[in-house]
Length: 111
Image 1 (tube, one colour):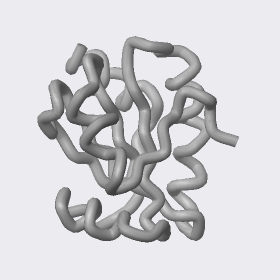
Image 2 (cartoon, rainbow, N blue to C red; image 1 turned 120 degrees about the vertical axis):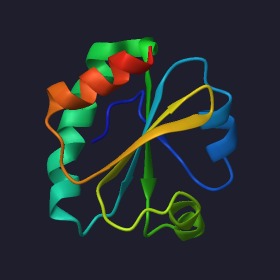
Image 3 (cartoon, helix red, strand yellow; image 1 turned 90 degrees about the vertical axis):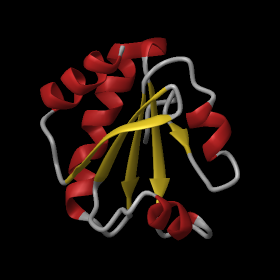
């Protein structure tokens, strides 16, 4: 179960949630069948709990309708893919599993 502050993104709410955010945003592109994605989920839950309102953590399920276009828009070719945004601007993309401390450091650098 995802932390209650984690936002599920779709093509319909992406711009509002990411581009209009006043804090750094981490977007995780994932799929239910992806083993590394499942390993990353509890790490993102912990970060959401620890960081509170200082960051926004969002997830995009690639298997949901319409989300493939989002993946194509950001050239997501492998999952999990972590996209770091500040002020609505994509600052960095990381593919694959990252340790919690590295994710936290990247978010802190955007604050």
